[in-house]
Length: 463
Image (cartoon, rainbow, N blue to C red; front, side, top):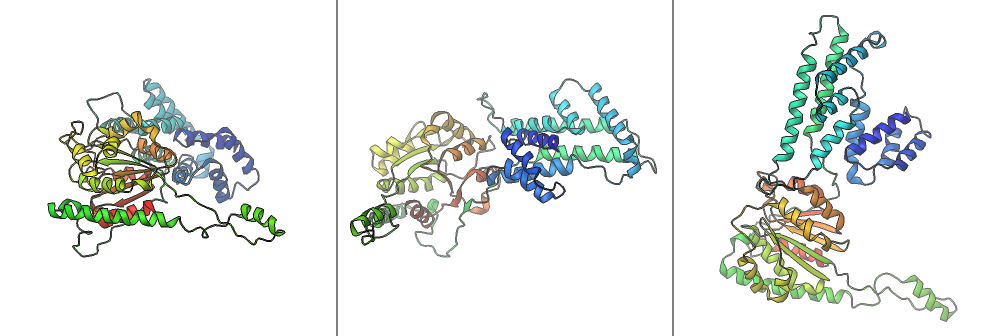
């Protein structure tokens, strides 16, 4: 049992689940206190020690089912006598040995052979490296075809391996359950290997807050999409935003004026009670200073997305007194820091300068992956545990490499990661949209197509 737990821990590490030596030792000691025949207790003991967050539970469940119920299962429909006479094990050993002699020195071939023999660690490690690899050295080809081509090469080797294994094995004759069992066993393991290669496991994100848009059925200014505004409506929108910004500032300032409200400061109250022979005559409340967060804005300014980005930047910089700091980045295919442009100019003038800046190449295709990579290289230090990261974009990366793992690193470094999408929700997961991949690493996703949706988000952010 100890050896099995050690092998399972090695499989977890090969699949990207971090398991330390001390956690393995704790799991072994806990197993001794329960009945291993009770699978629910056995699985709970392993999960308690090996899983560190809810986001890893799905990966653990898949690995547990694979290791304890798939790779170690006996062949179905085999008689007990046929298993006991070691004929099945001997045939399997002969086939594996034959494969080792025929195959070359390719790492993938060796990993597949080990997988068929019951040792999945090298195969798991290989497909994990395929999933997590980042192609950063090529500046010519930036598509996501690199990982796909690697998976395709492994799939081809799996199919070729099946042909080589099944080719010399004669068809099962009537009553020859042993050969039938070998064939089923190899088929099952090859299908398991294909399934593990094809799936793209993402961390569990059950706690994500996904705000749905509400169709109110009216055509007021607040419900109209930003892209449909006329010049007259744009001017009217500016006055509405100024009025709403002043209203929010007043609300924030009033929230902290009342002194005799909130949570009682027990230490100061008891200390003051010393003047009155221990009787708490004076109740002292905690004086909380306004919670001002640090905001980092990440805006796609390509095409119609800019219509939403300009109004959100307008709102944030109108409310700059409510935040400790606002840092703004815009991008199409390259990232540009526009914080100083908005700090040194009025909002309307800053927007014009951003739109006409030579570094913003509107004619190029949007590339989220390259932008995230550039942010990681040059600006990752701006994210702290007090930072709220807001990404406004449609997530359409023109089939380029999305590099969603960089977004995972950004999530780990900041307090909250919120994605605002200006597209209708029915289009979020269609075509070249990468929202299905990015969604797994966000704390919150919500639509941002009109003023009402934008104001609802800003109010929650400020208040």
